[in-house]
Image (cartoon, rainbow, N blue to C red; front, side, top):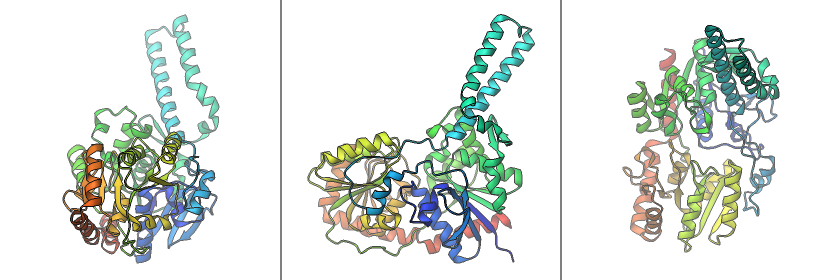
Length: 466
């Protein structure tokens, strides 16, 4: 019997398969899809492939049993060659040099802009014709001005105009060359984490080709109710809301990370989701340091979401404790500002981009893990901390009620003063700390063991193809 062919679209994932790639951005979503892909391949019940950015690797190659397809001509938009020394050394660096703040999908943003303005110009022409004023001086001048506005940027990007459309989602152009790789792979099921331009394009492709599209929820805002309230608005990272709604409503199936996502999807969009928690390899990569006293933070230099500046605020409030920050450069301005502040704080040691194989060393050497994010889905950093029995204290989030219901730590209601007090309690109250530490390890064993999680994905795939 032929194995089901499953393709995971996770463009930033390649550095996890190939550690020789230095200075390339990836995050929690990629850790999740990397684990899912390699464990599916190891079990051997499905044929697994993945679409990744073009780092100059072979167009098609196999790693960890997964067939990797390079999205040729599309490099990682956050590739930072200057950061490779940080990745290779894994030691504190002396400057705050960061990669450029590159829009994730600037080409797609331009497509949306161009289509909207072209549509606007067409409507204006029809209106002018209907009113019989197309030849008037005023109408002619308006036409020339509008045409100039539309084609000003078109001239700079003339190559983009040569692409043949595969289809349209409202005003948005789905180009043939951007979905051609999916035809090449010809999978039965396509799965992608998150809700963005590429998710909308993939949803359209799967509907057009009769394929199955699995929407793999990332962070909670992937199902934001606000998307439906104003379809024409541009949301976080400048993705139009109507494109996000299209991805949600066109999916064959949804896999959520937590109960909140399941409820939001049902209540707002009328769709059901399967809850599958993030998989985790429970085997420690490093021995636990029994004398650990540092407070750890891990994330990207994105103050809109991850808020590393709030961790530095905490370090200023608690000079008696030592803090370690592992910050992936993402937003150049935030990266430089945080490095400058960290250098001025004697109780903060900051690390730059670190190889994935080395990241657990920080958790093994930490006493406490702090998260300052505005929102999360279910961060892998929480699972890495819990795996080593490191309690978690957050400024705001409590994914899956891991802290409030399962006792793995404490959330602080987005109050920095409360966060400071909670950190002090965790660092000084031995009984409170021991309870949270034990709860962490109980929780990951019960809910996130990859040996239990990966078969749940296989069950979803089998149902879709039954």
